[in-house]
Length: 95
Image (cartoon, rainbow, N blue to C red; front, side):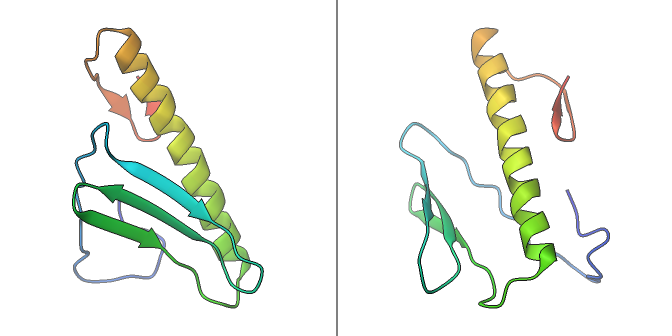
């Protein structure tokens, strides 16, 4: 994961958010503003927000987010079926 291709330079903040059975995620759509996507784990809330004026890049980010979330769910299901152990993964794909 990184900021390649984003034009960002310098340091990047990183957050590792351990999740368990109590963690939740939620999409909130609104008529008069851009949507929100939130993840709650423990006492931490992370909310993804977008600018009020959306661009094609924002749509592309949302699509990449959905693709990566789908890959994550597939890998978690695979690990669960194999006895709950994780395995080596390639970026965005189960190994």
